[in-house]
Image (cartoon, rainbow, N blue to C red; front, side, top):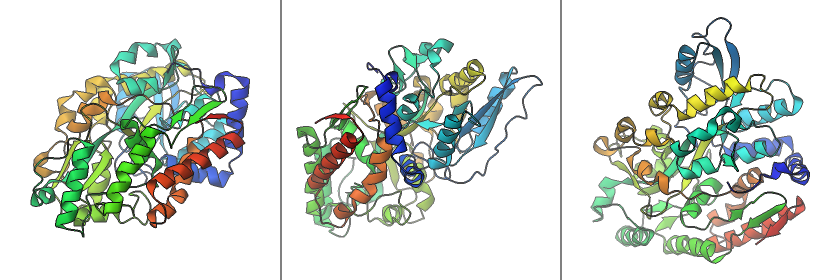
Length: 467
């Protein structure tokens, strides 16, 4: 990024501490749990307490430098095993954590107490600035990380770096695609997925007229990350944070309102539902996809892996992960993780060696893209790996590719900047969306509410807000 992080100034650090300290432990736990629906970067099963190995030191050699690594990706121990086997002077001990507050709360507490923190941990892109601004992350540029810049898609590298500094290594991402029920679409005369959002709207209206009892899709307004991914593609990103105390919040500008009005017209027509967020505990969204209630889902590269556990013979083999409408020119990203080295590490050079190999090694990625990890790479060599492009899962039609469409659009994801209060925003959106889901508020009204509420919150935390 071209700006200085908030943490480079004394006032900036004080502001962020105020943001974090102003949230109770219970609220912060809840907010971080929303920040990481365990699996925004991993497929179904990642949220479990750990059905895989938590100690991966069997390949370690006597006298090797010990490194502790926290994360939640299923099957990542396989990568750690390979590293330990091929790097005899370093011994990485992997400890499984539950994604979200299950990792972030103890990690923040350990870093603050200067005791018990790991050398390395999995941190999502949108959460990373909160660790950077508190100066908890090591600049990996001093350990040669800048040489990997051109090996990653631009947006991913930009979100972990700034002015020659590298605050974490980017790993997996969530390039967006359109999951659709090809069998059902063909029943309505739609033989190819919509290439543009205008065509998406026309197809949605066509299906609704033919069968008012089904929906072309569902607008999950309570899932703040999903909404932001679509806004990113539309050029309607609502936040600009260039460091210091200044932040821009804009949910009501021309592009933002055009985005809201597009979806509201489809919702008002009845072609698109507005009732369910996929990742709430009581949501019937996945059952709706399987039963034919919903025909499409704009989702990330990892989305079909989550839905797969809900698929029965009713829809198995009917699904295709195609390109997101409009992704020929621009796309969006939902989820993904980075791997920083923390300032509490007694062995930062060795920890840097590990994270650079983990994220920028073809050998590591040959494992990471396979089950049970099924990670989607931001690492360019892995994006063109035939193994990745041929990867499939049983729910997909005729062995069609899980990752080919998202891989093609991944380089066209624009760079954005995360605000320094994402935990507050994401924790609050679920509650804010309740009126929208109940049909008591339109999407433009919801965006106006987001604008006023986020501006009020940012000002209360001492930020200078631009709109």
